[in-house]
Image (cartoon, rainbow, N blue to C red; front, side, top):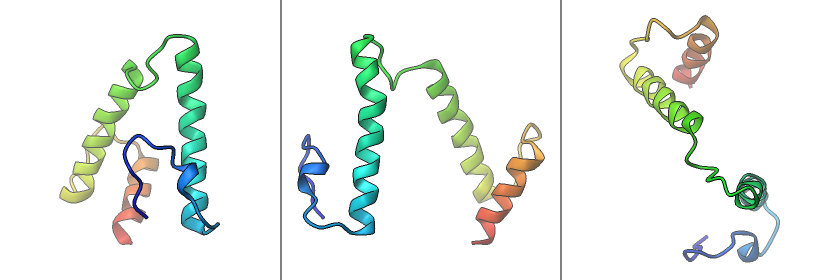
Length: 87
């Protein structure tokens, strides 16, 4: 499916498929995140927690490929990473 830039995703879904449902749910979640931020004049995508999450995700992604764990990663996260690796 080709979606032109700056067009709402929901407007371009012709039939209900699992992929179309996924796109609709994603668009709904984006709107749920963006609208309160606009009302309260907060940039929902430029928060310190979001930046920290990006850094943590980047280090975990690198660990997935190098198979070297950060010593600060807890056992639960390591277990999930092992499951991802085994796929």
